Length: 574
Image 1 (cartoon, helix red, strand yellow):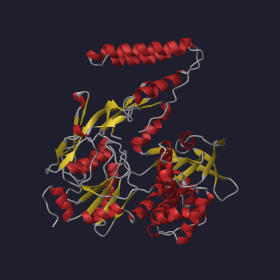
Image 2 (cartoon, helix red, strand yellow):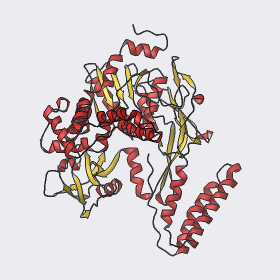
Image 3 (spheres, helix red, strand yellow):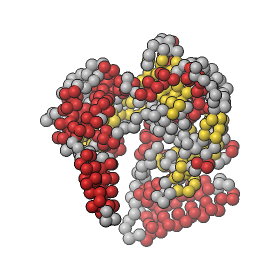
Image 4 (spheres, one colour):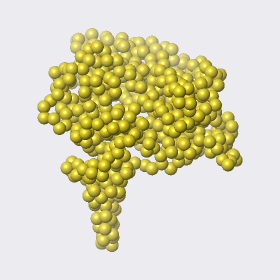
């Protein structure tokens, strides 16, 4: 089975048994009997505890079926029991019923049978939020903003989950989906007959030049074949465009297959170099993973970009290259997932993705942030490892690194955070809605990297927000209101009434005022959304790079500063 370093847990659809109780109970007991057989292979010291609690579970399960006033559905009981059991472990140990095996395959391969769209619930309606270029939906003329009304004659009711809708749109390659669409600005419904195909979402949606000598590769996930995609992009940049240095962007990459991460590291470090090792409950299963091939770019200056969304396999790549002093890591502190999962076959064509080990980078550190086996807070959430338990390690050249906190960048860079105003616009889907409205009035936008909204467009966006009855409630205003209530409770409200009223008045502004404060940020957000709708993933990445402050930093760091960072303490960038 493939090892995974990088997912959310959903309820299962355990098969419903409609036979009489003795038959249903027999099936349940057969399944649990298999668990008892498995328990026989547990360490002898724990065998009694395992079998004891499995027998308790069987007796409670049977007791509920025998005595409960209603007729319980065994699949529902089992689903709740399994979900609760796994909830006490970590969020990466997940049970997949037969109905969700396709989801597990997609996470490993990046492939699925469907029409090539992403959908989401907006205002309770199933809305196409992205169309994958070159796949059936794109060829048929379906666009972002289209609302799916029905699939194959089945009406999609308001509030239907995204998972349910996706199950209608997905299907075996070659089958046909009849899709009824409501398009903003059109009165009549549109009907599309779309033949499903095998859809593969590229792991490398964009690569290219940042300047005459600097290559750039964005890796979005670690699915099967992602290392090959990185290799092909690297060879093209090196041989055709003759790059002299490279930026590998892992921001927002939540991870995936362990071996893909090792193969990517191997592109930059020598054959035989240890990349990562794993340690679990059974020492016989501990492994050390080394580079198996000669590198393609052993001496190419390299910068790796990470952020808080870079997890697991992304942290293996960035952490290992950092430990080996092979790359400068820039960005913000990564997620901190140092756990490895494997998928195991379970009864009745179900699967269990289970955490089997922790991984350690070449310096010996494990970057796992949360302690799932330790003390939890009052809400049951795992806690970050205490500072006193964080250990220091050194890279090959003697640079200090730490465990238990994700991968820390080599050069701390103070990047601007998204403003609360823009965050609120995203939460309310107003950026997306305006991009759809704008796109309905414009057939094309020209080259992606050259696109720019006019001042008139931004004025129209202010009117759009008013028409949507959007009111921005800042956290500062909420705290002012809370402070006013506290002052009233303490009987000092008369002393601060004027000051609080002035503060509330200053914060109680119209949308045009807040747009004025955050114009550049709002405009860039809208432009990115419009470019995505017209030029898809490749185009929006090319556009975003032109406005990315971390890219500007990376280009400045290459050269003497990068050499000094990799040389360690006391080195000079002169």
